Image (tube, rainbow, N blue to C red; front, side):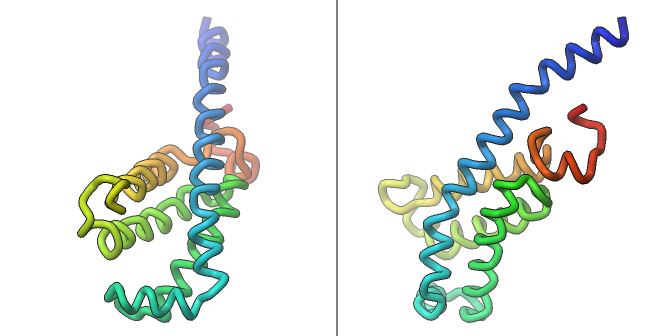
Amino acid sequence: MRDFLAEIRVLLSYPQNIILLLARLAVAYGFSMPALMKIENLEATRLWFESLGIPFAGFSAYLVSAVEVSGIVLLVLGLFTRYISILLAFVMIGAMFFVHFQHGYSVANNGIEITFYYFIFLSIFATFGAGKFSLDQILFKRGRYE
């Protein structure tokens, strides 16, 4: 009976893992355009950060760009997912505070809505990990998804 229940648990974990994979890919895709825009012209990014009043604008521009680009790659691969999700969540908090907060909640007014959704998804990845379909699972098996 114990083996049967273990098999049922594994079977029921597949939809969860597929959803985690699809969510990781969607979030990575969502970061691609903003990250590429920052990387293509880091000086413009620095000036924009400076105009927003972001402290250490030059350093912040390089740091945010690096976190976003590495976040795209690591989320797609499902590698170090919890750690990169935490870093990306901090980027989203910064974006909410410095860029979107003064416009309210609605995305129609450039509010915090989309950045808040990204923050929620990243919090899920930081809490639950990348799922079974990830390099995290292959390299650092912790038994949760087996």
